[in-house]
Length: 91
Image (cartoon, rainbow, N blue to C red; front, side, top):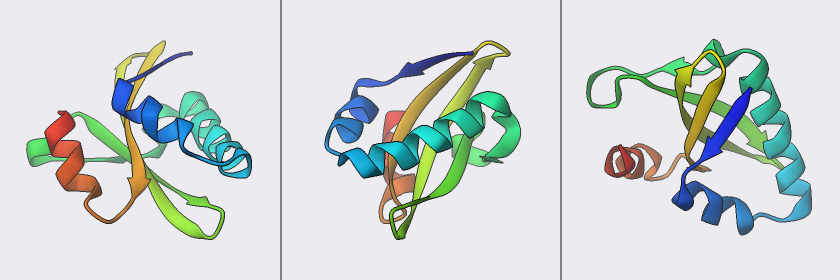
């Protein structure tokens, strides 16, 4: 499975602490093994999946798009606050 990362998502990942990156890696591995694990969005965000996971003690969301059976693009990562608004801007 090939995982592509948008520049804005990459910047967010770089700001995480090492223990937070471990939680993110687990979430990415879960998505890579089963891409439909996230919640499929409709309307303005059609074609985008959002996977919810625990990052230390808070719930974070990871927005991604399945390009093909071998390729996924990570769009955005962050807490729920303003997540969907920012995701619409990225799309």
